[in-house]
Amino acid sequence: MKNSIFVVDLFCGIGGLSYGLKEAGLNIKAGFDFDKSCKYAFETNCKAKFLHKDIIKISKEDIDKFYLKDNINVLVGCAPCQPFSTYTLKGDKQKDKRWQLLYEFARLIKETKPDIVSMENVPNLLKFKKEPVFDNFINELKKEGFYVWYSVVYAPDYGIAQKRKRLILLASKLGKIKLIEPTHKPEKYLTVKDVIGDLEKIKAGESSEKDFIHRASKISDKNLQRIRQSKQGGSWRDWDDNLKLKCHTKKRGKTYVSVYGRMKWDEPSPTMTTFCTGIGNGRFGHPEQDRAISLREAAILQSFPKNYKFVDKKENLKFGQVTKQIGNAVPPKLGEIIGKSIIKHLEEIEDGKKIKK
Image (cartoon, rainbow, N blue to C red; front, side, top):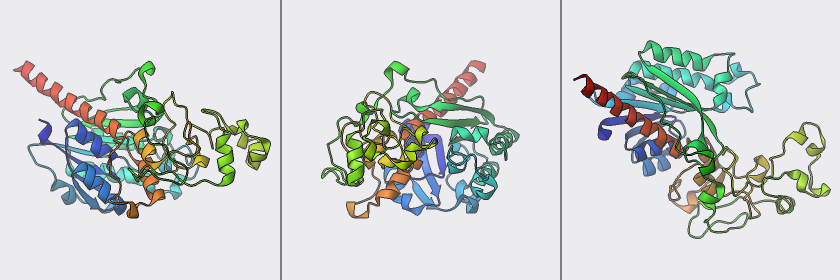
């Protein structure tokens, strides 16, 4: 059955979602993305075709050639979430056209008529009422005959060492569908130490000779002094006064306690962002070493395997670009959970048919 589940991934990026689905046993046929720099990582790790194309220009024919009539055809995607993030929710979204990409997703669902759909995004999408894009998306699915399930999912509940909350949607024309039950209880959550505790020690600005993706950003002398005074789970309040920033003396600045902070070994990490390899962008300091987390550590905390390939050789590594790609990715483990949920759904349908007979 698994070999007959064909998947096309819109907004595929470097393949986080597709890789997870592949690990669950689904057949990844293609991924579309407007960022051509993702091509190497997607094709190398997911063993599928990458197509450099904006979703607005993707046609029914572009997708249909990867589907077979008698197979279970699946369309998945994670539309860019920046318009719905905490940082931009208060802004004027009429000036940000990226939220319209979810409507393009709905258009392709109507045109290609897949059997199953999955969408992943930030929870704030549920709060976006100025233009009820998510409600409209669900209504379109229901009009097409889909059973729809969605919920905000906490990543540690599914074996991801990261305090990430994501909105997951599953929809099927074949019957009721939902995500499988959590695989980890709080006392069994994976921690930062569990997943990156055994990596080679490196200094800020250096990379491992064994793995050039295990590379940390450079930091200034001032920031080096700051992180040396930072405690696990602490804040800038632990520093000497001469190291504190002017914004920390202002009322608003006092609330940003996580910037320049160190992660804790014995807890899941903070949510990985597109700036997660810089200590000034959140609690992205290594728990012990005087630096921000490396690219490889960020990827592992996103649940990418330790051997995931992002570029073909060291000379082609663009640090900021890969950081952004990692932060934008769907955690592969979450993709695997979605894949297992799809398989369980199909097995239950088959069992139901047998009972009826």
